[in-house]
Image 1 (cartoon, rainbow, N blue to C red):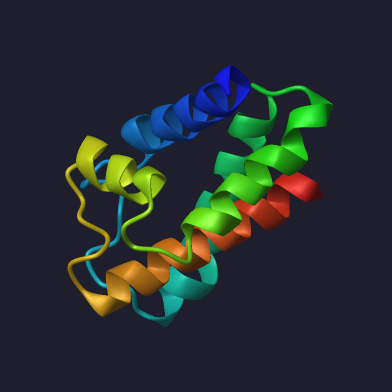
Image 2 (cartoon, rainbow, N blue to C red):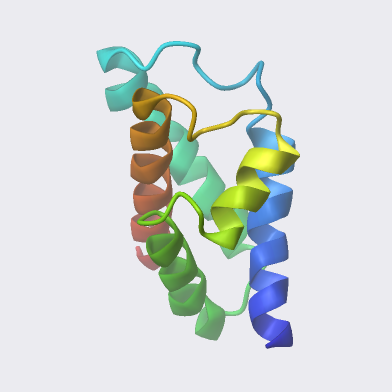
Length: 110
């Protein structure tokens, strides 16, 4: 249980530091989705990977993959609350967050 909380804290720290309103695209156009989002996900995965043991990578990836399917998931609630970006407000924002979390999870495994 403590390990899981530590992993969630890593995600919380990542989003509170790296996904400030000024850092997140205002509009998710094709450039943002095809260039910016993958670059953000890769950088996040690299930073997060440095904070966990090799054994925790799969668990962290699973936490992200689980959360991306549920707007009411506690981790999604936390992400939306800490960086003043309500990723659930607009469909395009929610879709972008889902894709971001999916890409981070994938990049963690690589």
